[in-house]
Image (cartoon, rainbow over the protein chains, first blue to last red):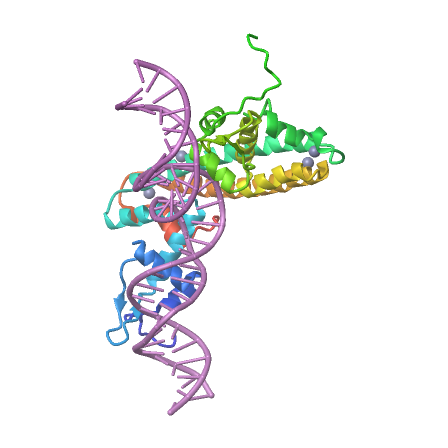
Length: 146
Length: 146
DNA sequence: CTTGACCCTCAACCACACTACAGGGTTTAG
DNA sequence: CTAAACCCTGTAGTGTGGTTGAGGGTCAAG
Ligand SMILES: [Zn+2]
Ligand SMILES: [Zn+2]
Ligand SMILES: [Zn+2]
Ligand SMILES: [Zn+2]
């Protein structure tokens, strides 16, 4: 409201965008090395990196993709898709692949949870280790576990 | 049935126990370095490692613990518990800790799955990327995701 | 006896996603 | 002007769970 120089996207230093995205400065430089961020402009005299403010959104994109279970490699591919002007279907099919992977992980963890629960419930919690069904199952194999 | 030399636990070479446990020879030596396996006897002339057959069971213990979500460090602690003659309660409490961790992972993955499903269902799968709700959510943040 | 399969040690390397120096230069507040 | 806070490059280290390779020695079959 006060100043209306909206046309000038005053560039931000690496510290600002890192803080804006809630990550470390080193991580931003790492993302640049790993090609998740394009090489930014530089201040000619100091050599400092100068980022457009939209870079913060891009870093948040990366953070969200990470929270959704995408690796950095996959996230880079998503970002590249946009550059390459591919269509929606490509993006959606990646999301579907990721859903399948996530479900597989969940199923595996639920199997693990069930096995641990059965073992913990069978363990008296007192007494000699020779009677402990948890160690026994680990040593001899559990009927239901595999 | 044929030979009854049961009292002599003829030792096995590293290749045999690795094959018996379904893992690699290098992995067995790695486990020894990481103190998940005690240092085995050696053939005096060749220097070959000589293992009692029960080592295969120990390796399977490790494999099962890994499948149950224990790290190698935690698995070593389980194995050390047995050596240290601690009681059942210690083992059970570790299993409970692990159950809690597994449930947290499951909840996180279910949150991720829900977010991905909402996005994928909203994405038409055809057309321009500018209309893709998946990329839009990653760029601008999704209301339900966080 | 020779060949190939097996074994030895020590060391380096892999992926992943950072993180931490070392050894500088620059900007900014007081 | 000075000192703190920031920035630069480049290299190296973290942790997890192994795998691979070099450069050998040993054992069993033919
Ligand atoms: Zn319980
Ligand atoms: Zn018990
Ligand atoms: Zn779907
Ligand atoms: Zn789409």
